[in-house]
Length: 354
Image (cartoon, rainbow, N blue to C red; front, side, top):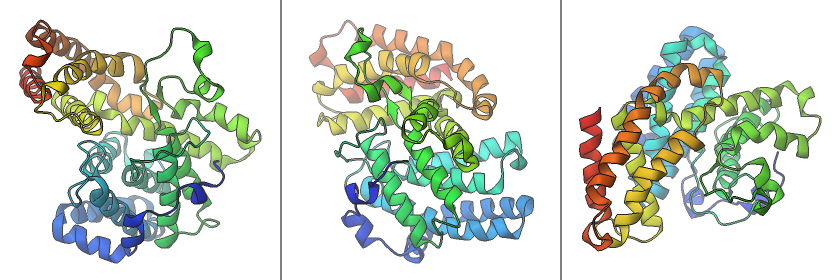
């Protein structure tokens, strides 16, 4: 879908250093044996429901999962020194374990094909591989997502997949990761302020707009069932990525706090400084309301079926959270509280409303 990604987003130093899937599995086994247990449990479910061929495909996917998780943990997680509170291996694992596991349990394994479950699992570990990219793709697709697509393709190559034989998997991951681009920018009152790419994607997830983007770049895509399936999976992947809206209220608030903390880190505002107080308050009140009520939307029937009731149950709590935090901090001088103060209050209110 996007030409020239490998040239524009080559391997970085961490990718060059971490090339061996077996070494990645060993590192995970040493530091996160629970993840190895998750791999084994997921393989057993796939083999029981789809047979030996899918179990063998999972064995290759497991190597790719390990390699992508370790690279993510070294870049921005608990194995490295550039920690990002949200975009790290824990976010990948919450999708791989909690969210995909819930969809499997509630809808049944045969709701999707075996390779669809493998594609979604790899999406979980690969969609946020790169987080500090600045190259302009020239597409609505974000630079981080484009770089993650390029690296994912190299991971698949290294772990025994073939671009021709496994074209459906390569295509699904490219489209799913592209669709995970999320536009949270304030929207201008005058829509003419957007450029052409932004008109296609103006607020929220890119996934539901990908079919229109495909019409621009590949008008004959509807004749290719693998492209059509990739676009369908991208809708479900988007719902899995943003399923925090339909999880418990504590989990929703935890993910909001992690994302807010990461934003403050990227803005170089320490959480214990008063400089982070007002931005943090804005993020966990009005920003959270905008994400929940305006930007988030379910993109797939399956994602909506599993998570819509939870989102409905959280709606009044999101509003009440904002009311309580604004009452606590809204009339205080901006130099009298820090971002950490706001997060402590948010956690207290979240457990009270749970």
